[in-house]
Length: 303
Image (cartoon, rainbow, N blue to C red; front, top):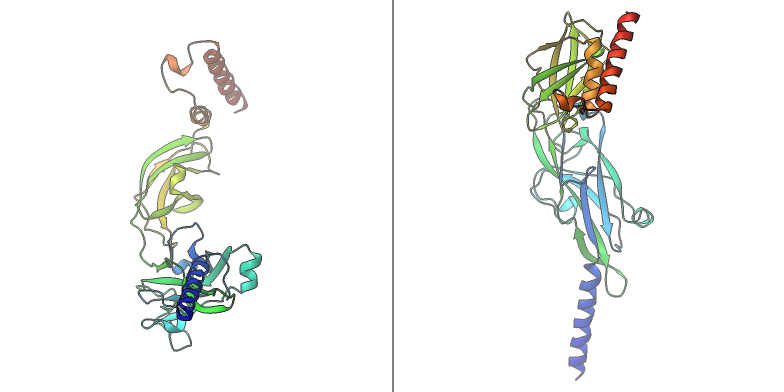
């Protein structure tokens, strides 16, 4: 009977421990809450930010490290192959005071693929050409046992954050359209799939006079601070997540125009282009045309 009671107590204790331990969950993601991020030579002198989250009640700090190993072990010292670099741990007090979620950073130039002091040094230096590698940012903490004491039960991030150091530039984009605006040009750029941003440069006699950079999803690029009736050469560049810039596109030309700028803004605001639909067939359309005519007349008088 005593043996039966002892066995039952052990089973209940184990069940309680398992239930308590399962309450702790660890997550590491990019700053945009994705499972991967890319960095490159342009970020060698800076840090990269990531998000960490600890759900539940851990009993130790959150250990963080980056490894070239194929998986995450229980600690940085337990990694068995490749190079590993430890990051600053998140203290237990910080986990509690932050509500279990916050951001942290790592130095791009201190990734384990690069050579620095230490037994786990890599080869080459940040910024050297031809170095490309995928690493994993690991995270681990410990849970309390059924009696409230800190146990040896390690809880790791279910999925490490995948970090890619990328030195490969994207392919050159192409310029598929140029529209004249008042003292500006609207440039449509067809970017490669791995591009995150596009940059358009306006040149006059080979000298850059203006440029604009924006996200690929933002649509056509508006290059401002130009002079009307002057023809500019336009070049487009693609920029990937790691900050690598592509070669220049084939150059195009564009000439800002004083009168077309108003009509272009009218169309962008929802105005129709041609036919009866352009005026709405009534008073509102006539008013719009009258306003356009008065504006053109005023501009001519001022010029």
